[in-house]
Image 1 (cartoon, rainbow, N blue to C red):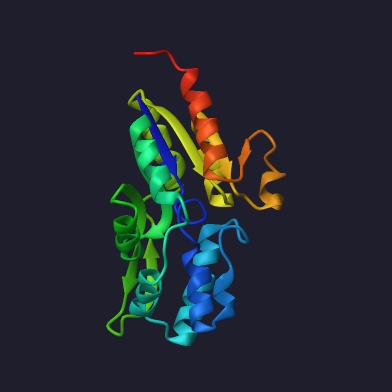
Image 2: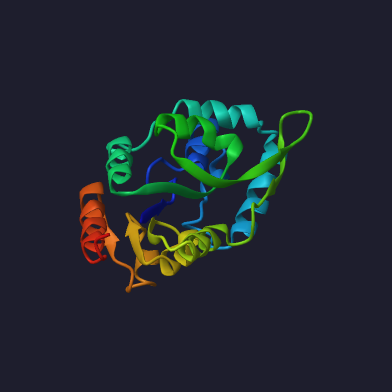
Length: 205
């Protein structure tokens, strides 16, 4: 049995925080896990900006509602479902993810959650578990699944290395060059080729 684990933003959907930065004019929110590898450092940085600018959760949700998956993403997820199961492993938040999952025909997603005050301003975040992507892959492997994983950022590296087959999807050159053992794909057709080639190496049940 095969499970493909995908990062969300950068693989299937544009970066939410970059879109929020563009819509609100708050340029400091453009930084993502491609820029800062320490996730807590990145989120504490974002929370300070949110507090300063009094940016509400609804403003962010409205931005998300105006966005669309990458061209071909829905069809790619449909294709993956024909190969096996699909799970989105993301460092986004359930308060952001629901409308995105509807656009992608409701795949399973494992992600985190937010703390919001009475003014609807995000004040904290709660990780499901530390290094959640890697630990999800480890747990699935313990259930005797073959795991394929695809991602693009620093926070995907442990997941890609833990998977039976880890694949970069459109990573920045500075990240890909640090991990030359992980194959790089630049579009969904190339990603399909990598996945199909790996599946062919597996014993037929």
